[in-house]
Image (cartoon, rainbow, N blue to C red; front, top):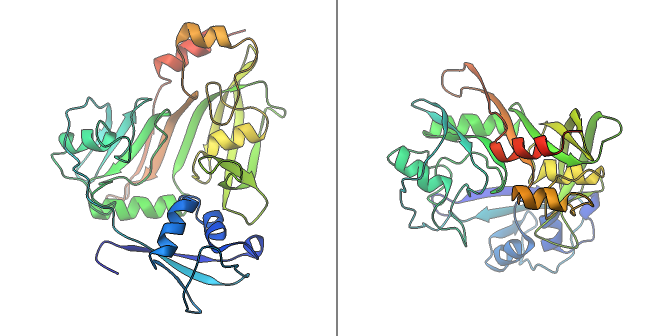
Length: 317
């Protein structure tokens, strides 16, 4: 292990008993793809408490413990770029940004520049927490490219550690505005499930049986009934990949515009084409946390962006 590497520990549960090692770890660690885990196993970056050489195809048993070493991100030639940002709050330790839909959070294959990180490097003159590695300086959490709304970024390592701790213990207040197909019954409720990668498509997440993947809880309520749709508020108790999108689709009310977890429903095509609405109707509207340095409670709100306002108007009964 070299400086900058990190280690993730995983224990095989009842739901993973008898599975291949790469499949079992992909269930337990949904943020890592199965292909990535296969590569890590082949590189000797996965170790068992029992020792011995590991292969991706070996079968695992309940209770087995594994340690996965994640090498520090290879440096990207991440450059500071003067990209306009909507700054909601900024101090010496952190910055809260209202991200527009279409902006990728950090550089990755296919998006090596033009990201939020490129913009922040310019705005902050390079002063961002280094804990996320060269590829993701300051990034504590993220929202999807085509989701808009509030995001907090750490400028110092102390702030990064404090914010990460709050995300881990689920004490962050996060609420999303979503426009979903149909009218949920009941109008308010809770989706309590386990989320892991889909068996049919590894690029997607899906609801699975208890114990497989990560526990995910979303509290939803209908804010306004629309024509064939509803304006929803979704509050996250946990923060899993694509959580709101997966949970709303799971209860039969996928988000309008979501090409991954939902299909365009009859009567909506002309509306979406007229508005040129081509993304999931999801906006991170509320973000609240305890400042990791001053220990003062902070809460921020963001109004619906214009494209979602227009969609809302077009769907009014």
